[in-house]
Image 1 (tube, one colour):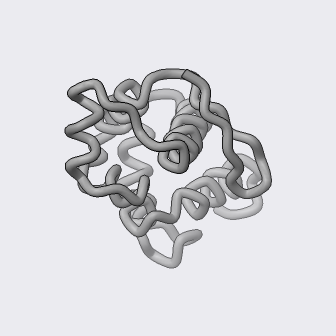
Image 2 (spheres, rainbow, N blue to C red; image 1 turned 90 degrees about the vertical axis):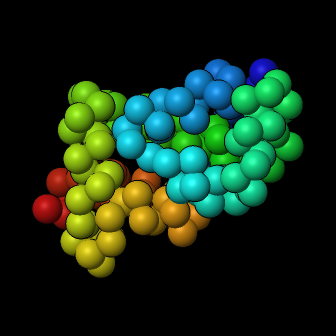
Length: 124
């Protein structure tokens, strides 16, 4: 199952099933409500995917973006506890918002930018 798309100028390919992407984020304490908003879908869509339906192409692109972001978080922080702590803590880079709140607002790109800033050492 491959879906391609672009976000912030980079190609994203979904390398696994939508359910595995969602489960990886759920393990970090990200709720289905936040995931649905990040993906710009009705929360019932997540339930349909659990029953075997497959998301539309635009949603697969956003899922691929979430999958890539999860991998980057794992590389940056190393383990789920550290990632979860960062996601649920206030971020100066995000103007005091928690990264999970940026996801809830559908701003996956802002969370990616915050991780980029951490990785580059440009923002403490």
